[in-house]
Every structure is written in C-alpha cells, then in structure tokens.
Image (cartoon, rainbow, N blue to C red; front, side):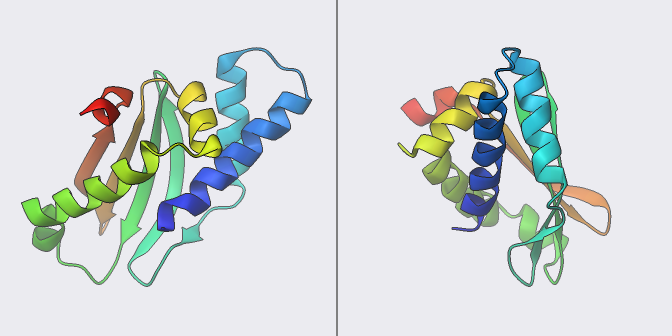
Length: 132
C-alpha cells in the first residue's frame, strides 16, 4: 500500500526522537515532520507524489501532487470512496507504527490532493472513524 512508506518514515522519526528523550508532544511532531520533509518528494506511482507534510492542531496533513488524472475523475464520489477506504484500512489497522503515529497526531490525518497546484480533493480521517 502506497501510504505505508510514509507511515514507516514518520514512525522512524518518532522512534529516533524517543532516543533523544524529548518529552514535548509538539517537539515530537515537529521532529517527525522534519525527518520526513528531508525525504520529499516521495513518488508513489506515475500519478501520485507526496510533496509536503505539515500539521495543524494535532492533525497530520499530507499534500499530494496528482498527474495524469482528470480533476473531475478525482473529485468523483467513487474515487473519493476508494481513496478513503484505502486510507481508513491503513489508519485503523493494528500496526505498531500506525499506533505511534496516532498517538503523536491525536486528531487524525488529512490527505490533500492537488492537480496543477489546485486542491482537488481533501480527505480527513479522525480516530473516531475507526469505530464505525
């Protein structure tokens, strides 16, 4: 799954931070984001590239650049449903790296998809979504 690559990088950043004994949740978040930013851009496939990562109020935000896909196709309910399903499957899994990520970013994650520098689709996953 293409999202696993970024999750592993984030978890590695969080683990490295643990070795430094920094106790602040904000410092933990900033360190993990900085660690991943050094790896950017991350190309997942011929259509999807992670170009930025940030945070807002304990929400982890991914920014993807999309190529070779029509904006209307990406905005379609079917596409959004498939993308949301993939993200939920990973986010709601019992993976230890995901658990670490959820702990650090307790308000969930948001994936923003851009075509030609214009946000075309945004999907937010909250921890409560895993209980549905």
